Amino acid sequence: MAAEAPAASTLVATAVSAGYEGEKVLDGVDLTVGSGDAPLGLVGPSGVGKTTLIRVLKGTVAPWSGAVTFNGTPVNRLRFGAAKVFTAGARFMSQDSMTIVDPRETVKDRLKVASKEARKGGRPHDVSPSQMLSTVGLDEQYLGRAMRTLSGGEQQRVALATALATRPEILVLDEPLSAVDPDSRTQIARMLAGMFARLEIGALVASHDLELIGHLCPEIAFLADGRIVARGPLGEVLESGEHPAIREMADNAREALVFRR
Image (tube, rainbow, N blue to C red):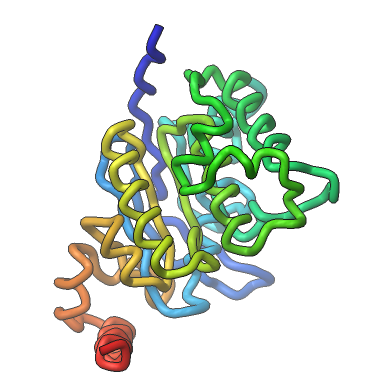
């Protein structure tokens, strides 16, 4: 019997301010990621706070003010069953997702953990480990490979497959394919775009790779000075030059395009 479609969910940041050791990084950020919505790109200069925002969304960094809610409940107040539902239903992938603690851990071991989290969170799960890998362009021969033997790009693909393994309602990705070669990156981006649409997965994708963002995200939110300074299609935002950081990124993108030609 086919798995039921996941219920609609929302991850919402409202007037979020946050930082570290008295230094403010985010200053009144509003952002919504909803299942069924088109993927949203999170773009901005290095060090502007994209990763901090993702940590606040995940609940690992507490906001100084404002709130982050998952289906109306603050993420830092989720307990027991509700926390398991959040862990399975809203998946996060970052560089931390590639951490290898046990040198004997295999790709199959990592995917099994995700499957277990899916069941605990009440997620529909009828996808085999080999199918999980195929979504990121890896074949089933990788299942027996030790994680430590994989290249950086292969580890990123496995981390992405693990994030997708619970068939999440919401997926938050921080530089998901930075170590993957450009040709494979484009192929995976197209596969992901189709999967997000088919499974109605809401996604937030933070990346410096504007080509990846262009493939995946019909709209972006541009983060600068600790807040969202512009929203809209990537090309339109870059052309607008509403903020100095946008103009600088647009100039750099044009220079990179000329260089590639």
